Image (tube, rainbow, N blue to C red; front, top):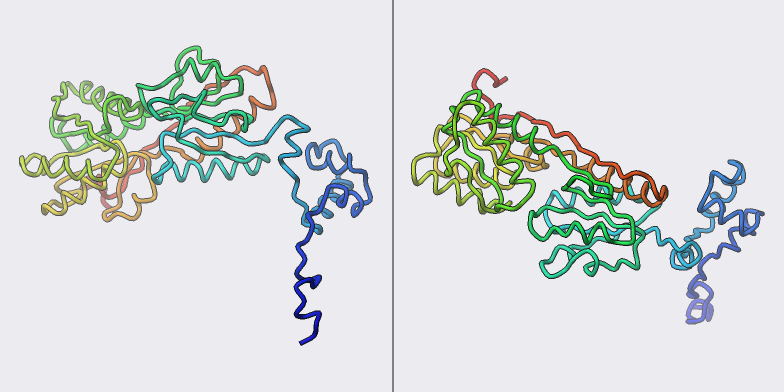
Length: 353
């Protein structure tokens, strides 16, 4: 073995120095200012020059120094996202789509749930000096500090609530129409007094809206819902299982129909019912909410109200970037449609293929 092969100082072992913007400029035969314009405002450079610079970037493997760039532009191109939780399929899908959209727009995401803790707020629950703007998702009727959000000195987009006069971009889903259509679907073959809503705790904005719509449709059929027809717990499989087991013990689950406030609750109810020997949908018809991936994995497949999570994520990112790039523009308030997806778990006999 030669000395060159064994020497720790071999040129093959030396770490490569990062490529600088000057190196890109020399490789492309342009000025440093031109490289900067291509990276930050490509519309200001001719297409042929931009392509030459981009080719040099690819060939050299150049990666911009975001920290140095932020010092010059006073922009980090980082978007903060404050969520009630960072676990579960809904939040995972939301963040997957938001991250993809942010990357398409040349931004990065910084995600946290600290601002949703009882003793924190958006003004001290996030590293606000690191982000250009903030997306906040609100799900609770309590701990919603809208004044604090509106008072932040950075652009903000709020998902989940749209109070009158809110001076920031807002995005909400139409829980009312989705829940109403699901309830009407269940009433096709089940009398109002045998329909149930199983939701999260009182104070959760989404669950409360869905419960209100459920009760309103029943009243429209001339039936005042009994308090036992609307149950409150948590967005969890365990709560759905517990509720269904209690109804089975009472002998009141068979022959009924259920609208669950999310798909996890619905799956818990289905599993408990099947363990007690009930057939879905012959003995129990059920619809979930969100239309998550689990709906197509369950047997029978679960009917659900589709929440457009991908559109919600895209609109949130675009709304915040609009606030960043068009300061002073009038805030927009977006309402996204929901839709009922009927599958085998709630079909009536004539609907079966």
